[in-house]
Length: 244
Image (cartoon, rainbow, N blue to C red; front, side):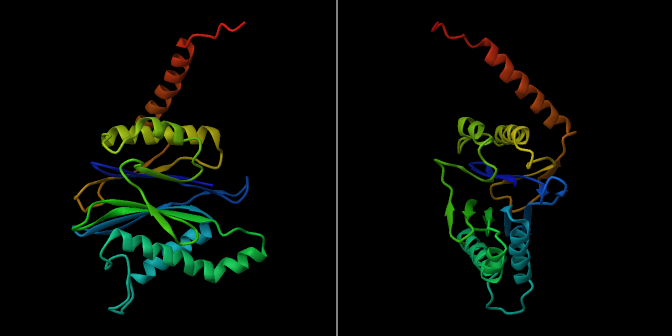
């Protein structure tokens, strides 16, 4: 399991993903689930992946291989015209991997489980954010619902629902996302730091603000402690019921 979240704000895009992978309690490892494709000054594309690691790595590798195609007519992440087309390429890659591996996985009782958040900006277009499903179809976020989550979503969702709006300040959103991750990590052992976090500012067309946050990170530790103590303080201050 994993946890990834992408936010579309007026100031730009915010991406975050955990890095834990596991194939059982004794096979725990770290693997990046954030993949950044950049043509400086032209486009920035970010993929966050969740689900079967073999499937999502195959999707990312297929998209990377397409960039090396010598065919001028071949579409890839660096020559399509819009982020909608980028999401379409990711969906096509998902279907290609399913056609190759789907039946074999089914024969071994393994579900074809994968999802990808696709966000970024192409020169001449506003930033956009999509959620691509295992079937290759996808939806786009909007100002009324400015975020997507994939993976283990339930523990980190309430704080984002309460705090984040399309016009939220970027650093407030960062703080909220870290609390969302802390809530998830506390309740699900399959999600863990380090957390990969990236801030993309609208129209910058550069992927120049990316950080890996460990449990020892001073700011993350401050947020975790402050949130925990704050919750206990608010709970204690609430009046008790007088029903009986």
